[in-house]
Image (tube, rainbow, N blue to C red; front, top):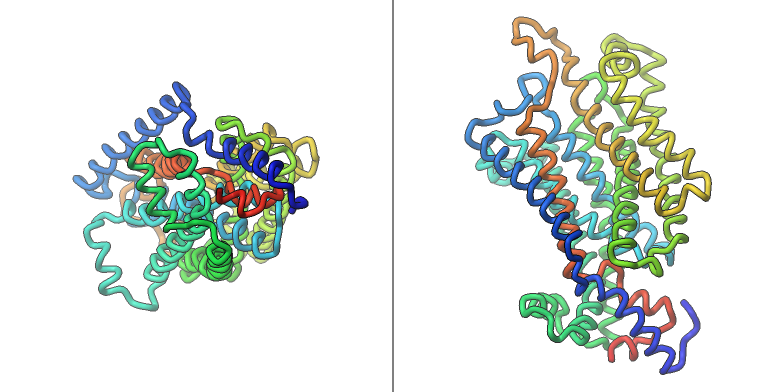
Length: 449
């Protein structure tokens, strides 16, 4: 924290910080925002029509069948769960060990986490042929069922992520209410409800710090559980490609990679769209780039382990699966995910010049594309190599090809997650006002005036 300032300097600095971080909420984004919302609404309209068809006609409108019963939907579910883990990484892990440079990105990470955690739960419903029977999972679910545990940890993680988003917002909402008294009534009502009567007493600040710390500790095992349980859905079977003892940490490490990449995209967007270069500056991008290298190296280690051992032994069944990925029909997607989604980003980000915002935006896009494709080739190819021979079944059962409705629903869920982030960024400040002011040496008395 900077040295404490005199009253006049403190007020001047706080006014500058507050004005800069509140401005995006009041700024008229004009045509650019309208086009952005129109594109998202268009995607969601296609999603709505496609899901109507699926509800009316059943899962037969998709490319799913008796063998490939999991496809794009479950790939998307695993991808969303992965992307949501960045909230735990930034807020909990880095926050608990006292890393200060995360202040401008902590709320962005939580917005990403909340959006994708919410959508992860919905994707499960979209994958069900009879979503009206979802309640049966809770009424008749068995404790030994990984699906019950998956729903439990996804719900728990979403709730804790929401709390970690809302609690640090409380002082900011009290500030915003004072500075935007003429805001729309619905916004004032929302801010008034979520500020919980905060007036800025030392006891209130202490309570917020304590609750955030407790939740940051609690979310670590929940976040690890959400991806570990998801990995168990695969690893508890005997299928070639899924029968692995390292799927838990393998999935967790891959989740950190996808999540950090999403934060980089959000940082770049907010930096330019909301003119926040003074806060999301090059040094922050440089440090997040180094973080992406670190988690990518861990992920690369697990990728090598995942394929080196079975490739060395080449047991019956495993050999066909591995050769299909390395040199067969899935080789293009497999090597794209490995090279462009992991190896190349590591090499590029080792150079300081490549850790600039523009380059990192492009690298993050490649990482996200690679991350989604990687989940797809984890989910699908294994199902097309069952233990029993595929015979006397329709020719279409030998392959899995996503249909138009399936693709529209998948894109719609991604669009919904992005729309949630867009809305949250317009009704709440994307960077914490009071924590940024604290870092700048502003006292609480000035913050609460």
